Picture 1 (cartoon, rainbow, N blue to C red):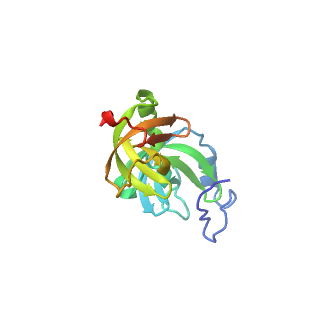
Picture 2: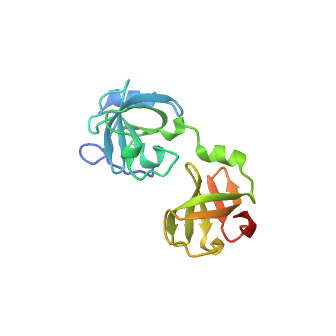
Picture 3: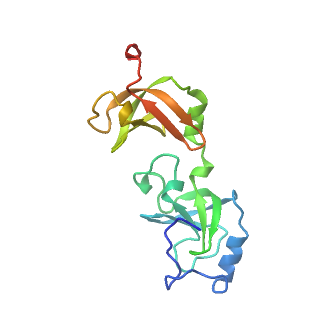
Length: 195
């Protein structure tokens, strides 16, 4: 089951193969990992519609392809317009056939190298890094330590009160979880002579 916004067809109901046989045949023929090209047709608060080059016209939406916000980029997306714009050509990886909405779920980020994995190759637990606070949350702060790579400093690992985003911070790497793309950091454990 998809954990997405279920928009449905014209009546708000799920679309069916019998109503739209050309659309269903096109989508059913796709396989996970296939690269599909198209043009960004519309940007909405919940994602991006893509008119696929070889795809039929969608009966309801501006495109047969759809990219959710998390699938746009490996980096945190503040504004979709920072990543894509209407009319832009894109190549995306096919993730799955969304049978409720009758669309191809796509990933733009899957076609780009994951900055976290490259970062994880060159970092070790105990290493000291400099970073910039990007977000304050109830249980700590997020610190960007490399382009597109943020780690969590839990409040128990903070050595001082952090005023806000943008503050510079020296941290120590406590854990790197490549599978879950998680980086745990500590400010409290920084060697005072490390800067």
